[in-house]
View 1: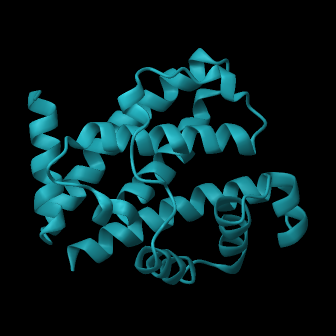
View 2: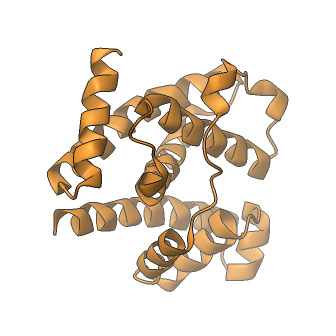
Length: 185
């Protein structure tokens, strides 16, 4: 195991035991690494690297929500990488990107639990989303939960397409802050 894997896994294990500081540190470190990962992947397929921030927020939120599915007997980084890769594929699917452009680095990187939230996690997410302003709620539910594209979400929510994008970006940022605040208590 690499020193990074040892450190991240230790933070995850402490986080699973309720250590809020470890959970914050884990999410911060993962955010930095995922930002680099997404920028590299997006640049490699000719996409705007500014889209990386939304992907980082989605992946970190998924790690938070799905943390109960992590098997402590296994390394952490392949589990996180699988989540990150699935989020990238979902993003490209929603934004009409080609899935053929996403390279499969190694078979073991895609082996993880499916990315559907369990009942408890779904409740947590919906409870947190309900704390957002209505426009953010609608945009996030339409695109992130219901799988609509931005144009469809704009029609559903009565917003412009750029308004949907802004609401999603700000909403995910707010959700990440809410999660961090909740893990401190």
